[in-house]
Image 1 (cartoon, rainbow, N blue to C red):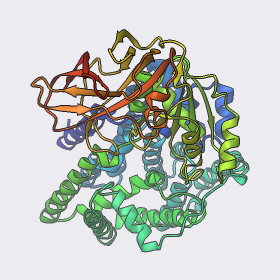
Image 2 (image 1 turned 180 degrees about the vertical axis):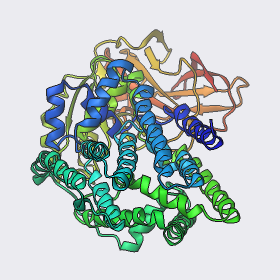
Image 3 (image 1 turned 30 degrees about the horizontal axis):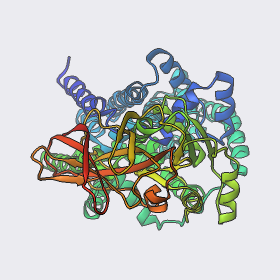
Length: 608
């Protein structure tokens, strides 16, 4: 094995180490769960829905391959993301071959080093979507194109056509790659239409692309596309260069530095390396097409530039591949920027939607007679990817322009026959910016609890705050206090201890929700106060349980509670991250004017 090949294998190993161990760090988010849902569909339904371009805007090839992979490896987080990571690594192996066509050993080593450490490619290698496969097909098709242009062999043209068509059937933004390849071939002085093989490729591409184009046109004619204010061309280029260097830099100054660095390298590659100049011209044409399309379609996300990334890496590597001093300095600059990008990849500031936490919270507190309402409709997919218990639910996704529309929407769901309504909202700001649904729910029902996993909002409403008996999920107590109140039972999800929340919209906390179930006796004192506390082992530190705003206690004070049935009383504990660890006692205290306070230790909870 040659020295350069050993370096290439080492770089692929580094790329693997930067991707695979962190595949499950982030929760699956909406688009990933939709991909799994599509891949689970029966084959005819999968083809019908992906080619309709309504529920899923990507063509069927990735989902067909994912379906086969899931049949072998399952649909767990690691398995479906491993599929993407594998394709990304496979594409990097093709980058080595693409770099060899430039005929300079150091360039292909630099290309692979850049790809292995590029934060942008690490992020999308860890996402169960089409982008790893799209990157691989982009690298493959570009390599086959260069070989076909040089050798003009029939088999090379066929391989190029097949990989390019496959890229188009993975994601529609492969049209940007088609434009880039047309520009690349034209810049070499050998346009595709000048040879029999090139004309054959154009013919195959048209024949294979017509059904795709027709279905995409039909599917998008009635689609509601929000208007994107056009970016100035310089700002659009700056954003692209930032993505391809530091990617999600938290500091705007670092983002500017990344874009400047990338621009210098691409300019140096075009100025100093004639062999890479056609590829950079093709890249410019692809970016031009993207910019023009972005004036009409929502194409501002960095994911839509994936098909052009192999050409970008070629230009960056060529810009680095000068004299030894320049090469060392450029590599050191890249390492510094990549390190900044790494930190952002696994940062709370860039956390994906925490559907893992959302489903876990609901599973820990929901009863068998609860109802979940989802807004928008499609956020059911990531929730039920994690939530595997039976749960009655409904969903909607239409705009809510006024309170009347909110009332009409809620009237369609059988809410009154359930105990608790879990209102789960995400991706709905476009449809209900004034929270009309929540406003109606707050008027109708007391709030039981609320929690805010990353980019998700969950509120539980007490449809039945008075119950005929203790629910099955509660721990029975039946302790009578001298004040005439009976604690029938309680429920919490802290059996395994409290740990700091990894991230969220609140500062790091240890959160516990407690539900108390009270029964009032005929001789019960009316002016009674219930207090729940988590008490440190030394007795000097205690954290109170706070009733939710607009909850049962706020709307219905104890003197208004009926005699006989069970009343639901909710409390939330938010322990700050600096709270000392240890076994805390969960203590309930009942007091009333003129009488002694009574305390009852309900449980011991380990705070970690």
